[in-house]
Length: 555
Image 1 (tube, rainbow, N blue to C red):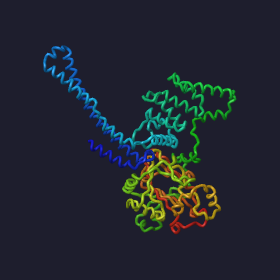
Image 2: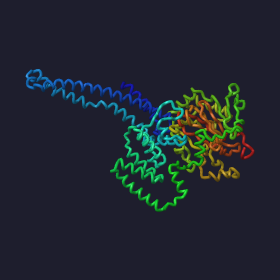
Image 3: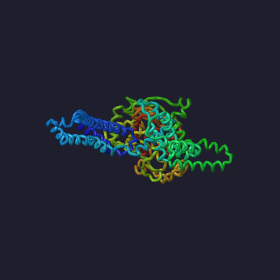
Protein backbone atom coordinates (compact mmCIF):
# COMPACT_ATOMS: atom_id res chain seq x y z
CA UNK A 1 0.00 0.00 0.00
CA UNK A 2 2.82 2.40 0.90
CA UNK A 3 4.47 1.69 -2.47
CA UNK A 4 1.21 2.52 -4.29
CA UNK A 5 0.79 5.79 -2.42
CA UNK A 6 4.41 6.73 -3.06
CA UNK A 7 4.11 5.95 -6.77
CA UNK A 8 0.91 8.00 -7.11
CA UNK A 9 2.47 10.86 -5.20
CA UNK A 10 5.57 10.96 -7.42
CA UNK A 11 3.46 10.79 -10.58
CA UNK A 12 1.30 13.66 -9.39
CA UNK A 13 4.31 15.73 -8.38
CA UNK A 14 5.75 15.15 -11.84
CA UNK A 15 2.63 16.64 -13.44
CA UNK A 16 2.60 19.60 -11.09
CA UNK A 17 6.31 20.26 -11.33
CA UNK A 18 5.73 22.58 -14.28
CA UNK A 19 2.65 24.29 -12.82
CA UNK A 20 3.06 27.67 -11.15
CA UNK A 21 0.08 28.07 -8.83
CA UNK A 22 -2.90 30.02 -10.24
CA UNK A 23 -4.90 26.79 -10.30
CA UNK A 24 -8.13 28.80 -10.48
CA UNK A 25 -7.27 29.96 -14.01
CA UNK A 26 -7.53 26.46 -15.51
CA UNK A 27 -10.07 23.74 -14.77
CA UNK A 28 -7.72 21.34 -16.56
CA UNK A 29 -5.03 21.94 -13.95
CA UNK A 30 -7.51 21.95 -11.09
CA UNK A 31 -8.36 18.33 -11.91
CA UNK A 32 -4.86 17.45 -10.67
CA UNK A 33 -5.89 18.74 -7.26
CA UNK A 34 -8.72 16.19 -7.19
CA UNK A 35 -6.22 13.34 -7.46
CA UNK A 36 -3.91 14.99 -4.95
CA UNK A 37 -6.74 15.18 -2.44
CA UNK A 38 -7.63 11.54 -3.10
CA UNK A 39 -4.02 10.58 -2.38
CA UNK A 40 -4.11 12.52 0.90
CA UNK A 41 -7.35 10.78 1.91
CA UNK A 42 -5.73 7.39 1.24
CA UNK A 43 -2.71 8.39 3.30
CA UNK A 44 -4.99 9.62 6.09
CA UNK A 45 -6.94 6.34 6.10
CA UNK A 46 -3.70 4.38 6.43
CA UNK A 47 -2.75 6.55 9.40
CA UNK A 48 -6.19 5.94 10.97
CA UNK A 49 -5.83 2.15 10.55
CA UNK A 50 -2.43 2.19 12.28
CA UNK A 51 -3.74 4.51 15.00
CA UNK A 52 -6.83 2.36 15.59
CA UNK A 53 -4.67 -0.78 15.85
CA UNK A 54 -2.50 0.98 18.41
CA UNK A 55 -5.51 2.12 20.41
CA UNK A 56 -6.94 -1.41 20.29
CA UNK A 57 -3.75 -2.73 21.87
CA UNK A 58 -3.81 -0.01 24.53
CA UNK A 59 -7.50 -0.66 25.24
CA UNK A 60 -6.87 -4.41 25.57
CA UNK A 61 -3.99 -3.72 27.96
CA UNK A 62 -6.14 -1.33 30.02
CA UNK A 63 -8.98 -3.88 30.29
CA UNK A 64 -6.53 -6.58 31.39
CA UNK A 65 -4.90 -4.29 33.97
CA UNK A 66 -8.24 -3.10 35.31
CA UNK A 67 -9.32 -6.68 36.05
CA UNK A 68 -5.96 -7.52 37.62
CA UNK A 69 -5.70 -4.42 39.84
CA UNK A 70 -9.27 -4.76 41.08
CA UNK A 71 -8.31 -8.23 42.30
CA UNK A 72 -4.92 -7.25 43.72
CA UNK A 73 -6.13 -4.17 45.58
CA UNK A 74 -8.86 -6.16 47.34
CA UNK A 75 -6.19 -8.05 49.36
CA UNK A 76 -2.69 -6.74 48.55
CA UNK A 77 -0.81 -8.90 51.05
CA UNK A 78 -2.72 -12.06 50.24
CA UNK A 79 -2.20 -11.41 46.51
CA UNK A 80 1.57 -10.91 46.90
CA UNK A 81 1.83 -13.93 49.17
CA UNK A 82 1.96 -15.95 46.00
CA UNK A 83 5.54 -15.61 44.67
CA UNK A 84 4.45 -15.75 41.03
CA UNK A 85 2.20 -12.72 41.55
CA UNK A 86 5.05 -10.86 43.21
CA UNK A 87 7.38 -11.69 40.31
CA UNK A 88 4.82 -10.66 37.69
CA UNK A 89 4.19 -7.31 39.45
CA UNK A 90 7.88 -6.47 39.37
CA UNK A 91 8.16 -7.61 35.75
CA UNK A 92 5.11 -5.58 34.66
CA UNK A 93 6.33 -2.37 36.22
CA UNK A 94 9.89 -2.80 34.99
CA UNK A 95 9.25 -4.11 31.49
CA UNK A 96 5.65 -4.10 30.35
CA UNK A 97 4.55 -0.63 31.45
CA UNK A 98 7.61 1.02 29.81
CA UNK A 99 6.76 -1.00 26.65
CA UNK A 100 3.26 0.42 26.80
CA UNK A 101 4.74 3.89 27.19
CA UNK A 102 6.77 3.34 24.01
CA UNK A 103 3.61 2.22 22.22
CA UNK A 104 1.68 5.32 23.30
CA UNK A 105 4.54 7.60 22.28
CA UNK A 106 4.94 5.88 18.92
CA UNK A 107 4.38 8.50 16.16
CA UNK A 108 2.19 6.71 13.65
CA UNK A 109 1.35 10.05 12.02
CA UNK A 110 4.87 10.54 10.66
CA UNK A 111 4.10 9.02 7.23
CA UNK A 112 0.94 11.05 6.76
CA UNK A 113 2.63 14.28 7.89
CA UNK A 114 5.55 13.66 5.52
CA UNK A 115 3.14 13.08 2.62
CA UNK A 116 1.15 16.19 3.48
CA UNK A 117 4.30 18.31 3.83
CA UNK A 118 5.59 17.26 0.41
CA UNK A 119 2.31 17.94 -1.32
CA UNK A 120 1.62 21.19 0.50
CA UNK A 121 4.23 23.02 -1.59
CA UNK A 122 1.98 22.40 -4.61
CA UNK A 123 -1.27 23.36 -2.89
CA UNK A 124 -3.29 26.38 -4.03
CA UNK A 125 -2.09 29.60 -2.46
CA UNK A 126 -3.86 32.58 -0.92
CA UNK A 127 -3.82 34.08 -4.41
CA UNK A 128 -5.68 31.04 -5.71
CA UNK A 129 -8.33 31.31 -3.01
CA UNK A 130 -8.70 35.02 -3.70
CA UNK A 131 -8.93 34.34 -7.44
CA UNK A 132 -11.52 31.61 -6.91
CA UNK A 133 -13.63 33.94 -4.75
CA UNK A 134 -13.43 36.68 -7.39
CA UNK A 135 -14.47 34.13 -10.01
CA UNK A 136 -17.62 33.26 -8.06
CA UNK A 137 -18.43 36.95 -7.69
CA UNK A 138 -17.86 37.46 -11.42
CA UNK A 139 -20.36 34.70 -12.17
CA UNK A 140 -22.72 36.21 -9.62
CA UNK A 141 -22.63 39.58 -11.41
CA UNK A 142 -22.57 38.39 -15.02
CA UNK A 143 -25.40 35.91 -14.71
CA UNK A 144 -27.37 37.82 -12.05
CA UNK A 145 -27.17 35.10 -9.41
CA UNK A 146 -27.92 35.97 -5.81
CA UNK A 147 -25.71 34.53 -3.03
CA UNK A 148 -28.54 32.32 -1.76
CA UNK A 149 -28.82 30.61 -5.15
CA UNK A 150 -25.04 30.06 -5.29
CA UNK A 151 -24.98 28.87 -1.68
CA UNK A 152 -27.63 26.24 -2.45
CA UNK A 153 -25.70 25.20 -5.56
CA UNK A 154 -28.67 25.85 -7.83
CA UNK A 155 -26.81 26.54 -11.06
CA UNK A 156 -28.08 25.57 -14.55
CA UNK A 157 -26.55 22.50 -16.15
CA UNK A 158 -24.97 21.08 -12.98
CA UNK A 159 -25.00 17.34 -12.38
CA UNK A 160 -23.32 17.45 -8.96
CA UNK A 161 -24.79 18.90 -5.80
CA UNK A 162 -22.61 21.48 -4.08
CA UNK A 163 -23.71 23.69 -1.22
CA UNK A 164 -21.85 26.39 0.68
CA UNK A 165 -21.70 26.38 4.46
CA UNK A 166 -21.84 29.45 6.68
CA UNK A 167 -18.05 29.39 6.89
CA UNK A 168 -17.75 29.14 3.08
CA UNK A 169 -19.99 32.18 2.63
CA UNK A 170 -18.07 34.05 5.31
CA UNK A 171 -14.85 33.31 3.41
CA UNK A 172 -16.39 34.91 0.31
CA UNK A 173 -17.43 38.02 2.23
CA UNK A 174 -14.06 38.35 3.94
CA UNK A 175 -12.23 37.96 0.61
CA UNK A 176 -14.31 40.81 -0.86
CA UNK A 177 -13.72 42.92 2.26
CA UNK A 178 -9.94 42.46 2.04
CA UNK A 179 -10.08 43.69 -1.56
CA UNK A 180 -12.04 46.79 -0.55
CA UNK A 181 -15.08 45.42 -2.41
CA UNK A 182 -17.79 46.43 0.04
CA UNK A 183 -20.61 45.77 -2.43
CA UNK A 184 -19.93 42.02 -2.47
CA UNK A 185 -18.97 42.06 1.21
CA UNK A 186 -22.50 43.15 2.08
CA UNK A 187 -24.13 40.57 -0.20
CA UNK A 188 -22.18 37.65 1.23
CA UNK A 189 -22.21 38.71 4.88
CA UNK A 190 -26.00 39.07 4.65
CA UNK A 191 -26.11 35.49 3.31
CA UNK A 192 -24.02 34.38 6.29
CA UNK A 193 -26.52 35.98 8.68
CA UNK A 194 -29.41 34.37 6.81
CA UNK A 195 -27.92 30.90 7.21
CA UNK A 196 -26.97 31.51 10.85
CA UNK A 197 -30.49 32.74 11.63
CA UNK A 198 -31.83 29.54 10.01
CA UNK A 199 -29.97 27.57 12.67
CA UNK A 200 -27.01 26.32 10.61
CA UNK A 201 -24.01 25.39 12.74
CA UNK A 202 -20.75 27.20 12.09
CA UNK A 203 -17.42 28.09 13.62
CA UNK A 204 -17.91 31.70 12.55
CA UNK A 205 -19.51 33.72 15.39
CA UNK A 206 -22.37 36.05 14.48
CA UNK A 207 -20.62 38.95 16.22
CA UNK A 208 -17.73 38.68 13.77
CA UNK A 209 -20.11 38.75 10.82
CA UNK A 210 -21.86 41.85 12.16
CA UNK A 211 -18.47 43.51 12.65
CA UNK A 212 -17.59 43.09 8.95
CA UNK A 213 -21.09 43.92 7.74
CA UNK A 214 -21.53 47.10 9.80
CA UNK A 215 -18.27 48.56 8.52
CA UNK A 216 -19.02 47.55 4.91
CA UNK A 217 -22.43 49.26 4.86
CA UNK A 218 -20.83 52.30 6.47
CA UNK A 219 -18.27 52.42 3.64
CA UNK A 220 -21.15 52.28 1.15
CA UNK A 221 -22.72 55.28 2.86
CA UNK A 222 -25.62 53.66 4.70
CA UNK A 223 -25.02 55.25 8.08
CA UNK A 224 -28.40 54.31 9.58
CA UNK A 225 -27.92 50.61 8.89
CA UNK A 226 -24.32 50.70 10.08
CA UNK A 227 -25.60 52.07 13.39
CA UNK A 228 -28.31 49.42 13.65
CA UNK A 229 -25.87 46.56 12.93
CA UNK A 230 -23.35 47.92 15.43
CA UNK A 231 -26.02 47.94 18.13
CA UNK A 232 -26.84 44.31 17.30
CA UNK A 233 -23.15 43.50 17.57
CA UNK A 234 -22.89 45.11 21.01
CA UNK A 235 -25.97 43.25 22.22
CA UNK A 236 -24.12 40.01 21.45
CA UNK A 237 -20.72 41.18 22.69
CA UNK A 238 -20.97 44.23 25.01
CA UNK A 239 -17.20 44.19 25.59
CA UNK A 240 -16.36 44.58 21.87
CA UNK A 241 -14.05 47.62 21.98
CA UNK A 242 -14.08 48.55 18.31
CA UNK A 243 -17.86 48.28 18.14
CA UNK A 244 -18.20 50.62 21.10
CA UNK A 245 -16.01 53.22 19.45
CA UNK A 246 -17.79 52.78 16.11
CA UNK A 247 -21.17 53.24 17.77
CA UNK A 248 -20.17 56.60 19.23
CA UNK A 249 -18.62 57.66 15.92
CA UNK A 250 -21.70 56.66 13.89
CA UNK A 251 -24.02 58.45 16.33
CA UNK A 252 -21.89 61.58 16.02
CA UNK A 253 -21.98 61.45 12.22
CA UNK A 254 -25.71 60.85 12.24
CA UNK A 255 -26.26 63.87 14.46
CA UNK A 256 -24.17 66.03 12.14
CA UNK A 257 -26.16 64.76 9.19
CA UNK A 258 -29.45 65.65 10.89
CA UNK A 259 -28.22 69.16 11.63
CA UNK A 260 -27.12 69.71 8.03
CA UNK A 261 -30.27 68.37 6.56
CA UNK A 262 -32.65 70.26 8.81
CA UNK A 263 -35.53 68.27 7.39
CA UNK A 264 -34.87 69.69 3.89
CA UNK A 265 -33.95 66.42 2.27
CA UNK A 266 -34.18 66.65 -1.51
CA UNK A 267 -35.35 64.00 -3.93
CA UNK A 268 -31.76 63.69 -5.14
CA UNK A 269 -30.58 62.86 -1.64
CA UNK A 270 -33.32 60.25 -1.25
CA UNK A 271 -32.32 58.69 -4.58
CA UNK A 272 -28.69 58.63 -3.48
CA UNK A 273 -29.65 56.70 -0.36
CA UNK A 274 -31.58 54.16 -2.43
CA UNK A 275 -28.48 53.48 -4.55
CA UNK A 276 -26.24 52.50 -1.62
CA UNK A 277 -26.08 48.87 -2.67
CA UNK A 278 -25.86 49.19 -6.45
CA UNK A 279 -22.97 47.51 -8.20
CA UNK A 280 -20.21 50.10 -8.72
CA UNK A 281 -19.39 51.25 -12.25
CA UNK A 282 -16.11 49.82 -13.54
CA UNK A 283 -13.62 50.40 -16.36
CA UNK A 284 -15.49 48.57 -19.14
CA UNK A 285 -17.89 50.92 -21.00
CA UNK A 286 -19.87 48.09 -22.63
CA UNK A 287 -20.15 46.05 -19.44
CA UNK A 288 -23.97 45.90 -19.45
CA UNK A 289 -24.19 44.95 -23.13
CA UNK A 290 -21.43 42.36 -22.79
CA UNK A 291 -22.98 40.67 -19.76
CA UNK A 292 -26.48 40.76 -21.25
CA UNK A 293 -25.21 38.89 -24.31
CA UNK A 294 -23.49 36.37 -22.03
CA UNK A 295 -26.90 35.66 -20.51
CA UNK A 296 -28.43 35.30 -23.97
CA UNK A 297 -30.24 38.62 -23.67
CA UNK A 298 -30.13 41.49 -26.16
CA UNK A 299 -29.07 39.32 -29.12
CA UNK A 300 -29.90 41.34 -32.24
CA UNK A 301 -30.65 38.39 -34.49
CA UNK A 302 -33.78 39.91 -36.00
CA UNK A 303 -36.04 37.93 -38.39
CA UNK A 304 -34.82 40.12 -41.24
CA UNK A 305 -31.18 39.32 -40.46
CA UNK A 306 -31.96 35.66 -39.89
CA UNK A 307 -33.30 35.42 -43.44
CA UNK A 308 -29.83 36.33 -44.69
CA UNK A 309 -28.17 33.44 -42.84
CA UNK A 310 -27.77 30.12 -44.65
CA UNK A 311 -26.23 26.66 -44.37
CA UNK A 312 -24.17 25.09 -47.13
CA UNK A 313 -21.41 22.64 -47.93
CA UNK A 314 -18.03 24.38 -48.07
CA UNK A 315 -15.28 23.12 -50.40
CA UNK A 316 -12.79 25.96 -49.84
CA UNK A 317 -12.99 27.48 -53.31
CA UNK A 318 -12.77 23.99 -54.83
CA UNK A 319 -9.78 22.95 -52.75
CA UNK A 320 -8.97 19.39 -53.90
CA UNK A 321 -8.90 18.04 -50.34
CA UNK A 322 -12.44 19.32 -49.71
CA UNK A 323 -14.10 18.39 -52.99
CA UNK A 324 -14.72 14.82 -51.85
CA UNK A 325 -15.46 15.68 -48.20
CA UNK A 326 -16.67 19.29 -47.92
CA UNK A 327 -17.37 20.83 -44.52
CA UNK A 328 -20.79 21.87 -43.32
CA UNK A 329 -20.80 25.67 -43.07
CA UNK A 330 -23.40 27.75 -41.21
CA UNK A 331 -23.72 31.52 -41.16
CA UNK A 332 -23.68 32.91 -37.62
CA UNK A 333 -23.75 36.57 -38.67
CA UNK A 334 -24.11 38.41 -41.95
CA UNK A 335 -21.99 41.56 -41.58
CA UNK A 336 -19.24 41.13 -40.65
CA UNK A 337 -19.49 37.62 -41.95
CA UNK A 338 -19.02 35.07 -39.15
CA UNK A 339 -19.36 31.39 -40.03
CA UNK A 340 -19.34 28.13 -38.13
CA UNK A 341 -17.90 24.88 -39.50
CA UNK A 342 -19.00 21.48 -38.22
CA UNK A 343 -16.94 18.35 -37.53
CA UNK A 344 -13.67 20.24 -37.87
CA UNK A 345 -11.90 18.16 -35.21
CA UNK A 346 -12.63 14.59 -34.11
CA UNK A 347 -12.89 13.59 -30.45
CA UNK A 348 -9.60 11.69 -30.76
CA UNK A 349 -7.82 14.74 -32.19
CA UNK A 350 -9.25 16.95 -29.44
CA UNK A 351 -8.10 14.61 -26.68
CA UNK A 352 -4.62 14.33 -28.19
CA UNK A 353 -4.22 18.09 -28.48
CA UNK A 354 -5.41 18.55 -24.88
CA UNK A 355 -2.92 15.88 -23.78
CA UNK A 356 -0.04 17.65 -25.51
CA UNK A 357 -1.09 21.11 -24.34
CA UNK A 358 -1.82 20.39 -20.68
CA UNK A 359 1.80 20.14 -19.44
CA UNK A 360 2.58 23.43 -21.22
CA UNK A 361 -0.38 25.43 -19.91
CA UNK A 362 0.58 28.76 -18.38
CA UNK A 363 -1.46 31.77 -17.32
CA UNK A 364 -2.70 33.54 -20.43
CA UNK A 365 -1.26 37.01 -20.90
CA UNK A 366 -2.19 40.21 -22.69
CA UNK A 367 0.06 42.83 -24.22
CA UNK A 368 0.19 46.12 -22.34
CA UNK A 369 -0.84 48.71 -24.95
CA UNK A 370 1.66 51.30 -23.67
CA UNK A 371 4.72 49.17 -22.95
CA UNK A 372 4.16 46.26 -25.32
CA UNK A 373 5.11 43.89 -22.47
CA UNK A 374 3.10 40.70 -21.95
CA UNK A 375 1.41 40.61 -18.56
CA UNK A 376 -1.43 38.82 -16.76
CA UNK A 377 -4.73 40.66 -16.35
CA UNK A 378 -7.92 40.13 -14.37
CA UNK A 379 -9.97 40.49 -17.55
CA UNK A 380 -8.35 37.38 -19.06
CA UNK A 381 -8.71 34.33 -16.83
CA UNK A 382 -7.42 31.19 -18.54
CA UNK A 383 -4.28 29.22 -19.21
CA UNK A 384 -2.86 28.69 -22.66
CA UNK A 385 -0.07 26.93 -24.49
CA UNK A 386 1.37 27.16 -27.98
CA UNK A 387 1.81 24.03 -30.08
CA UNK A 388 4.22 23.57 -32.98
CA UNK A 389 3.74 21.13 -35.80
CA UNK A 390 6.78 19.17 -34.58
CA UNK A 391 5.02 18.51 -31.28
CA UNK A 392 2.71 15.91 -32.83
CA UNK A 393 1.37 14.95 -36.27
CA UNK A 394 -2.15 15.90 -35.15
CA UNK A 395 -1.07 19.57 -34.85
CA UNK A 396 0.19 19.62 -38.43
CA UNK A 397 -2.98 17.87 -39.60
CA UNK A 398 -5.26 20.39 -37.91
CA UNK A 399 -3.19 23.30 -39.26
CA UNK A 400 -3.52 21.99 -42.83
CA UNK A 401 -7.26 21.53 -42.35
CA UNK A 402 -7.67 25.16 -41.24
CA UNK A 403 -5.66 26.26 -44.28
CA UNK A 404 -7.89 24.25 -46.62
CA UNK A 405 -11.10 25.57 -45.05
CA UNK A 406 -10.09 29.25 -45.04
CA UNK A 407 -8.09 29.35 -48.24
CA UNK A 408 -5.39 31.25 -46.32
CA UNK A 409 -1.82 30.16 -45.83
CA UNK A 410 -0.64 29.06 -42.38
CA UNK A 411 3.01 29.77 -43.24
CA UNK A 412 2.76 33.26 -41.73
CA UNK A 413 0.17 32.36 -39.10
CA UNK A 414 0.90 32.12 -35.40
CA UNK A 415 1.32 28.77 -33.68
CA UNK A 416 -1.78 26.87 -32.66
CA UNK A 417 -2.86 28.30 -29.32
CA UNK A 418 -4.74 26.01 -26.92
CA UNK A 419 -6.62 27.59 -24.01
CA UNK A 420 -8.40 26.15 -21.01
CA UNK A 421 -10.64 28.42 -18.96
CA UNK A 422 -10.71 28.24 -15.18
CA UNK A 423 -13.30 29.18 -12.57
CA UNK A 424 -15.41 31.90 -14.13
CA UNK A 425 -12.86 31.87 -16.97
CA UNK A 426 -13.29 34.76 -19.37
CA UNK A 427 -11.62 37.18 -21.77
CA UNK A 428 -13.38 40.53 -21.70
CA UNK A 429 -14.08 42.53 -24.91
CA UNK A 430 -10.95 42.94 -27.01
CA UNK A 431 -9.68 43.12 -30.57
CA UNK A 432 -7.58 40.34 -32.08
CA UNK A 433 -5.84 42.79 -34.41
CA UNK A 434 -3.35 45.51 -33.55
CA UNK A 435 -4.81 48.99 -33.79
CA UNK A 436 -1.46 50.64 -34.48
CA UNK A 437 -0.48 51.09 -38.17
CA UNK A 438 2.54 49.01 -39.14
CA UNK A 439 4.20 51.17 -41.74
CA UNK A 440 5.23 54.65 -40.60
CA UNK A 441 5.21 55.71 -44.25
CA UNK A 442 1.63 54.52 -44.64
CA UNK A 443 -0.88 57.00 -46.00
CA UNK A 444 -2.37 58.62 -42.88
CA UNK A 445 -5.71 60.03 -43.84
CA UNK A 446 -9.33 59.00 -43.41
CA UNK A 447 -9.77 55.94 -41.23
CA UNK A 448 -6.03 55.30 -41.17
CA UNK A 449 -5.46 58.73 -39.65
CA UNK A 450 -8.17 58.14 -37.05
CA UNK A 451 -6.59 54.82 -36.14
CA UNK A 452 -3.16 56.42 -35.87
CA UNK A 453 -4.39 59.31 -33.70
CA UNK A 454 -6.55 57.18 -31.40
CA UNK A 455 -3.95 54.49 -30.79
CA UNK A 456 -0.66 56.28 -31.37
CA UNK A 457 0.31 55.49 -27.75
CA UNK A 458 0.11 51.75 -28.40
CA UNK A 459 3.10 49.65 -29.36
CA UNK A 460 3.00 47.77 -32.64
CA UNK A 461 2.09 44.36 -31.18
CA UNK A 462 3.20 42.27 -34.16
CA UNK A 463 6.02 44.33 -35.69
CA UNK A 464 8.69 41.90 -34.54
CA UNK A 465 6.94 39.04 -36.38
CA UNK A 466 7.29 40.80 -39.73
CA UNK A 467 4.07 39.20 -40.97
CA UNK A 468 1.67 42.13 -40.71
CA UNK A 469 -1.50 42.34 -38.70
CA UNK A 470 -3.86 39.52 -37.71
CA UNK A 471 -6.11 39.28 -40.74
CA UNK A 472 -8.40 36.50 -39.50
CA UNK A 473 -9.29 34.32 -36.51
CA UNK A 474 -10.13 30.61 -36.64
CA UNK A 475 -11.53 29.43 -33.29
CA UNK A 476 -12.02 25.73 -32.53
CA UNK A 477 -14.37 24.69 -29.74
CA UNK A 478 -12.88 21.57 -28.14
CA UNK A 479 -15.57 21.03 -25.50
CA UNK A 480 -19.21 21.59 -24.82
CA UNK A 481 -19.99 23.98 -21.97
CA UNK A 482 -22.99 23.28 -19.76
CA UNK A 483 -23.67 26.96 -19.01
CA UNK A 484 -21.99 30.22 -19.99
CA UNK A 485 -18.80 30.49 -22.03
CA UNK A 486 -20.30 32.09 -25.15
CA UNK A 487 -18.27 34.12 -27.64
CA UNK A 488 -20.03 37.48 -27.91
CA UNK A 489 -19.64 40.56 -30.10
CA UNK A 490 -20.99 43.56 -28.12
CA UNK A 491 -21.03 45.99 -31.06
CA UNK A 492 -23.03 43.53 -33.15
CA UNK A 493 -25.29 42.11 -30.48
CA UNK A 494 -24.17 38.61 -31.49
CA UNK A 495 -23.64 35.57 -29.26
CA UNK A 496 -22.09 32.28 -30.42
CA UNK A 497 -22.30 29.25 -28.12
CA UNK A 498 -19.61 26.56 -27.89
CA UNK A 499 -20.26 23.24 -29.61
CA UNK A 500 -17.59 20.58 -29.37
CA UNK A 501 -15.91 19.82 -32.70
CA UNK A 502 -17.13 23.00 -34.40
CA UNK A 503 -15.16 26.12 -35.28
CA UNK A 504 -16.01 29.74 -36.02
CA UNK A 505 -14.14 31.99 -38.43
CA UNK A 506 -14.11 35.71 -39.14
CA UNK A 507 -11.89 38.35 -40.70
CA UNK A 508 -10.44 40.94 -38.32
CA UNK A 509 -9.35 43.26 -41.13
CA UNK A 510 -11.27 44.76 -44.02
CA UNK A 511 -9.85 44.11 -47.49
CA UNK A 512 -8.22 47.53 -47.30
CA UNK A 513 -6.14 46.38 -44.33
CA UNK A 514 -8.13 48.54 -41.93
CA UNK A 515 -9.18 46.94 -38.70
CA UNK A 516 -12.85 45.94 -38.60
CA UNK A 517 -13.85 47.40 -35.25
CA UNK A 518 -17.13 45.53 -35.29
CA UNK A 519 -15.16 42.34 -34.50
CA UNK A 520 -14.47 43.42 -30.93
CA UNK A 521 -15.45 40.28 -29.05
CA UNK A 522 -15.25 38.51 -25.71
CA UNK A 523 -15.25 35.06 -24.14
CA UNK A 524 -17.99 35.04 -21.51
CA UNK A 525 -17.29 33.60 -18.06
CA UNK A 526 -17.79 29.85 -17.84
CA UNK A 527 -20.67 29.33 -15.40
CA UNK A 528 -20.72 25.53 -15.36
CA UNK A 529 -18.36 23.25 -17.25
CA UNK A 530 -14.80 23.06 -18.54
CA UNK A 531 -14.09 25.08 -21.69
CA UNK A 532 -11.27 24.12 -24.04
CA UNK A 533 -10.58 26.03 -27.25
CA UNK A 534 -7.79 26.30 -29.77
CA UNK A 535 -7.25 29.06 -32.29
CA UNK A 536 -5.14 30.04 -35.22
CA UNK A 537 -4.43 33.69 -36.01
CA UNK A 538 -3.70 34.24 -39.70
CA UNK A 539 -1.51 37.24 -40.61
CA UNK A 540 -1.53 39.56 -43.63
CA UNK A 541 1.73 38.56 -45.28
CA UNK A 542 1.35 35.69 -47.73
CA UNK A 543 -2.36 36.35 -48.25
CA UNK A 544 -1.92 39.01 -50.96
CA UNK A 545 -3.22 36.75 -53.74
CA UNK A 546 -5.38 34.55 -51.52
CA UNK A 547 -7.39 37.51 -50.20
CA UNK A 548 -6.75 40.45 -52.55
CA UNK A 549 -6.98 44.03 -51.28
CA UNK A 550 -10.13 46.07 -51.79
CA UNK A 551 -10.31 49.25 -53.84
CA UNK A 552 -11.56 51.43 -50.98
CA UNK A 553 -10.77 51.74 -47.28
CA UNK A 554 -14.11 50.26 -46.26
CA UNK A 555 -13.96 47.17 -48.52
